Length: 338
Ligand code: EPU
Image 1: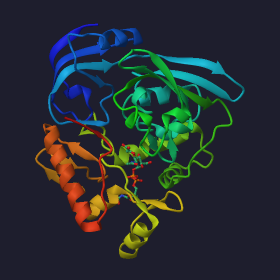
Image 2: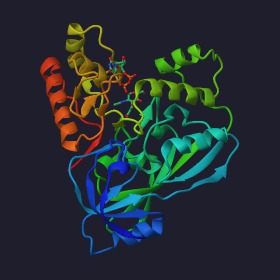
Image 3: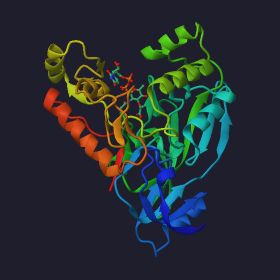
């Protein structure tokens, strides 16, 4: 465990923001994490994982602990299930491919989501009709103040839409070190309900899809809509899809009957923020090195050297425009640092 000084974080965040860390330390084991948290000479600590869901708006004047704890273990095999424990630093998509190679089902709809496994529960990642919570059993997390490891059950994680205990009461208190999943080994549940998947499978001429086929379809859809952070800095969906009440939705859809929407329950509806932003004219727009992606208006991009503040200013501008045009408040999904 080695503490380095004055390190650029550009390659550690998928937005590619060139902010600096005053101190930086790579963590390769749970024991090292405990030791690093005890380093009294660095009172301020900042936990960094895959860096795929954050916008850094200024230098981080703290000891940045870069979580890179690896390992995937099969804990138990049952008749139709396998219980898998994945350490926090495993790249999410590589881990999904690992499960598919062994014909373990459940994560295929969430192929190609950037980031690491340890941060997946924080915002209950989801895509194409499936969320992390659907295969989640529990996670282990280190309490920052005591360095004790605590196991959180699914109920204790209080999962919601892009939400969990770790974003609310648990915020800043725990570091997730491992996640345990229950996956299928046969009798897989094939989930094609999300429109774009069926269209993609038809295009590929597939009528009886395997979990591999679903993963390939999702990869194709994501590649066509979402920019690859290795080529164009971004953090996936920058905003959450806003939730509105039924009366609000009825008023909205009377004015915009063509707008797409998802019915969440009898009382709530979700409106795609990407649609709202596109209607405000931002899709594909570029302001210096900060921009709105040309295929998906929900994604903000860094063309090369945008600062975090420039991206944030663009986000504020978009929030204001959407509010003025539709009376709907959208809010960021990514964590704003600084
Ligand atoms: N739309 C537009 N213009 C746009 C973008 C979208 O009109 O520029 C419309 C689409 O035509 C469609 C609707 O909005 O009718 C929904 O779009 P899409 O299917 O692309 O999904 P989304 O609601 O924009 C959500 C997640 C994504 C996830 C996809 C697929 C959120 C905030 N985002 O996007 O998650 O991949 O569904 O399940 O819930 C992420 O969180 O980083 C992410 C990429």
